[in-house]
Image (cartoon, helix red, strand yellow):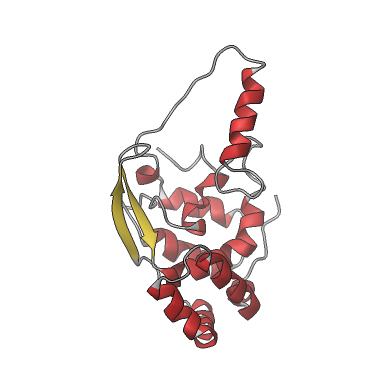
Length: 200
């Protein structure tokens, strides 16, 4: 597969960042951090653009909280200012990563999602008399950063985005060189491209 030529300039393009802000802000009207960003939108986007291009954009700021449904876990919700570059990255990297999963991968993919997955299961149920349900315990906590970055390096050729991916991925760890946060938006969960090759 040919490597993608996505560049930092593509990610940091002002119009791309503006669209990323609007995607990141959906459903969050009235939140103080979102409204503060919106009030100074041009200057915030200009600062983000400069920080992305010079390699100093903030990574790793997240609010953590526990959930118990559907199973116990810790969610890491990135600060809003970090969600904007995540969306900006995925505007370009997402379509590239989306070439890798098998057809029946439904999480984090345009045109897929829970309803499509349920319909697919119902279709399969009409053809097969058995199924297996599996859950890999601690999957995200065991994702190897080096392996994941190696896979990304086989997909993206520009050093700028690769350095940015490395900073985002390395901002969280559950052990030495391992672990991705559950709940972080977009690129930090780019695992969906290689679900069977980066985990334990």
